[in-house]
Length: 326
Image (cartoon, rainbow, N blue to C red; front, side):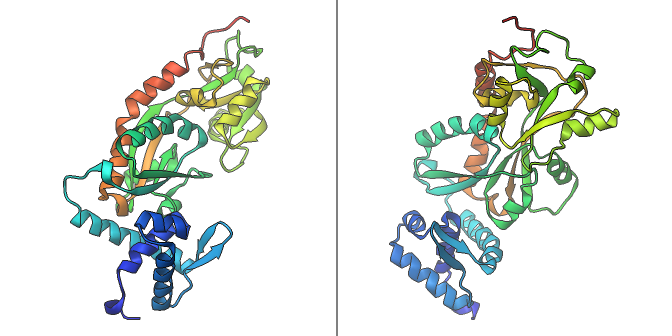
């Protein structure tokens, strides 16, 4: 294949199909017919000498060559879009699909306001939520699996702040603290939460990986203490439901308690040990940095920070650190 003879329009179709993982949805996004999209992919296959996309029951699955090619194609298209797009960007007329990765509680915390804004300001914008099963979202961004990650990524944020040359960009959205959460009728509800009775309780751990060892356990090991983790779950919502209906206690970011939907049944107390602050960071790849639509999304999330937090605090009005008598 000669690059000089390659129809560059095929790369735009390839990007849309890789984004949607479905020929019909890609056709709708491109304002093309499904047969036209299929034909374009066929021509690109012939030019590159690779199958690129394999049909499945749910859409298409990219080959390793397609996975390796896509980040470069996306970056190049984003640069071209930034170069030719007028400075007067009109979000109300843009058509874009964003793939975002967040934990369940973060999504419940952030998405309602974002969806209201999209409905009101950007009717052509779609959002696809992707599962977040790790505190290390950089591989997903590097592969082009997602466009944006929002969450608590302590190791990642620290590395990005100290290193140069990384294609991953980040911005801090919020800083808060961890608290101990339990049901209102818990035996510890009307007691001071000491290190001894905290360690003696049965614990629930929220772990994306399923690993039964977390930030709390690291902190406890530093002072030669440990706790018993009776249950490990991978969702904050599940954690809230279980803790509200058992004598297990857990640790959650203060601002995410309202996302459990169980604020009337839960109370929180300050932890009897010192933990670092919990930070909510937004991560994206530099290939999207100049995209007007992507920039609008980032700016919007940043601008939603204060009102969303105020709303979460109001919604969590039933959560209190003071003892509660049933």
